[in-house]
Amino acid sequence: MNLRAGRLKKQMSDEAADYTSSLSSDMVIFEADIKCNFAHVLMLKEEKIIDNDIADKILEALDKLKEEGYDALTFDNSVEDIHMAIENYVTDIVGSDAGFMHTAKSRNDQVATDIRLVLRDKITDIQLGILEFIEGLTLFANEHLETVMVGYTHLQHAQPITIAHHLMAYAQSLKRDYERLNDTYKRVNLNPLGSAAMTTTSFPINRQLTTDLLGFDAYLENSMDGVASRDFISETVFDLSSLMTTLSKICEELILWSSYEFGVVQIADEYSSTSSIMPQKKNPDVAELARSKATIVNGELISILTILKAIPYTYNRDLQEITPHLWNSIFISEETLNIVTKMLLSVEFNKDRCLELAGSNFATVTDLADIMVREKKIPFRTAHKIVGRVVNEAIDQDKNINSKFIDEIAIDLDFDPLNLDDSLVKKVLNPLENVKIRSVPGGPSPEMVKIAISNLNEFLDEEFEKKGI
Ligand code: ARG
Image 1: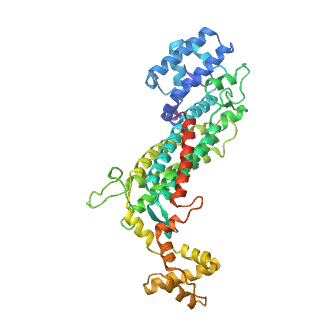
Image 2: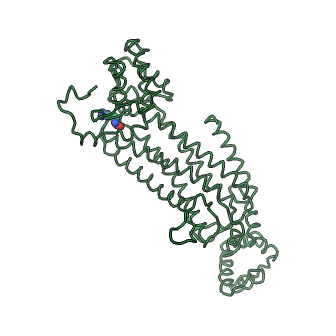
Image 3: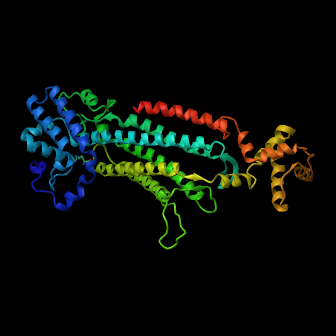
């Protein structure tokens, strides 16, 4: 079957054929293309657009190809893409009647349909991976409800938190990544088939039937949009970029925390490397690579948007160049999600070091200001000033903070002495006590984190059920 035998007199040069071929990434849509052809031919048969016996022969050949797999196809330079290769296969079996398969169908609507068919499964796979990661995080968090560590702003000690609260922050970010994909899925799972080249066809095709056969939610309402739109791809890759950003931020923290200076975490040997010259080294290479792979997905998103932005309606071959960026983004996201999940869930936190960091460097003194407001009814800004000076002097004079020391500073700043209860001062300066009193919704107190974990578990149950798991 040579497409060029009509309008064109000469074959494409080998160079041009290689340059324009999409075969290197068409393998991904091989099964989807068989499915798409199958649904189309079944519909043509149902609607009596092509003869029953011809349709049956074509359907049989498609079934055979499905069984035999990709390697049953033959390729030479006259085969531009997977659609032609599959048509050639069917023609070899059925003869020239195979040509009826292409009635009322174009490669333009076909490729758009194929990509959507593959993509919806890939989205579901990635979503399941995210749910599993969240599930692992909730279990891990349960083990660390009272493991106190310091939280940072500006990468400076800020306030005590627990490992559980921190892990649950990751989980919330992943939950949004999951939900974003849910939303995108609705726009992916729409059927362009029947748009044909760009204006549908004069044959009385049944678009609802192919929509049902292929399991799409609905067909796309505009045939030009059907063949020209790829924003379902840019949207998906944005979602993946966002997921990769979440994973990259997690990795960034693992890299910092596993450094000698932090000493907060041990990454398992299975996810670490060493040096070929420095025998003492344990390096977080997996986390580093995940961090840079996130950059690659960001780059794919920019490539896709930039290809799309200047294409006049409707199909232009530029669109072919978008698809490999999608598959690469999917591939990177899947492998990164998998390995980061395993790496993070197997780390060991150094509880003593976490507590040491939380108890040093004044991370608890916000609450010293808070008890001044609560117990002595002084405005927060005044308390903030006194405590700020208390910290300053404690550093300068190398002293511990107690009620007497606070009052000396207060007097020095022209305020009345506060006479705070020393045991109360001691209590709020204790990191675990400090965390326990932050028991408003969203806070790090163990009771609040337990509630957050149980809410998230409910979400997981619902979503696993929706995905049939
Ligand atoms: N390989 C093409 C793509 O991925 C398939 C559609 C080709 N259509 C065409 N009119 N040349 O977009």
